Length: 137
Image (tube, rainbow, N blue to C red):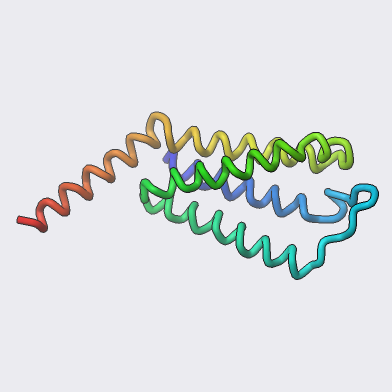
């Protein structure tokens, strides 16, 4: 249950991130040029795809994926926090959306590394170890 909630929170954060790409939400700063649509779509495809893929692996119980997701989100948090002040000063929606997205991601990582989430991954690891020991016999 904790892992499925965590995956849902990560995906909700992805949707909020996509909403921030809308010009009405995140206007251009003075002196800033619009990013070409092809580049935006490519970045959404790469990073959105990576997020969905890692979330799917987390849901499938792959222990490495929660660590990979933490590292991936951690890098994103560094970049997001760096631009957070600008987000609040140039857009009344982008700053709060960014903050809510970060909060969702932090909560998601908390769920998979604490309590029931950690126990679920531990039980799967033990189950896989027992299964491979039986095959070795």
